[in-house]
Structure formats: C-alpha cells, structure tokens
Length: 124
Picture 1 (tube, rainbow, N blue to C red):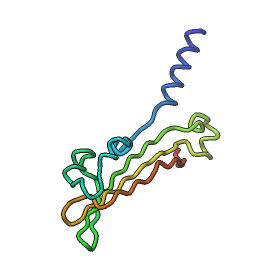
Picture 2: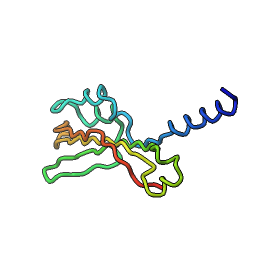
Picture 3: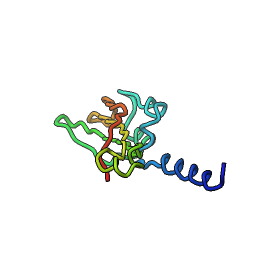
Picture 4: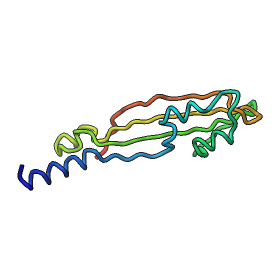
C-alpha cells in the first residue's frame, strides 16, 4: 500500500468515526440507572448517580420530574457523497431519555426510560 493510499484510508476512517454527543452520559449505562430504586432512592441519590438534570417539571400533587437526555450525532454514508448529500440526510442521530419522578417527600416514584431511537436528520 502506498503512503498516499494509507493517508487517505486513515483520513477517511477518522472522518467516518467522528461523532458528537451531548447530555448525560450516565443514562446510557444500564448498571448506573439500575441503581435507582423506586420507593427507596432519593433526589440526593439520583443527583449523585446522574448529576442534576437540565430540565424539571412539576405535577399537581407535589411531584417533581427530572428529565435527562443523551443525544449522539454521527455522519451517515451520504455525508461523503457531494451530489447525494444535497438530497439525502448526512447526519444520523441516536437519542435516549430518562425521566425520574419524585413524590412530595423526594423519593423516586417512577422511572420512565425512552429506549434509543435512531433517525436521520437532514443536514447540509
């Protein structure tokens, strides 16, 4: 293999493997999430495992729900074909969401896990 071909191969592999993630990585770890016990874990326990959420919502019965999200964007094969890129999505996305609801006393009342979803989002 020539030096130029090796360089091209390494460059393509680096670009293809590039991805960007944002949000709470801990929610992708099943072992971490499984430590949260309904009826036993507290807000302090959840904050120690996952950190504090970016958003929270409040229910009419004094409930508080913490919302966690993890999104990963990655290039699709179309991202590297200039003509096709104009009409096809060039970025794919994987997301996971976790909602932890606490009762009035601050104890976990329920967990809502939205399993990973993969989709393609148009991006120029």
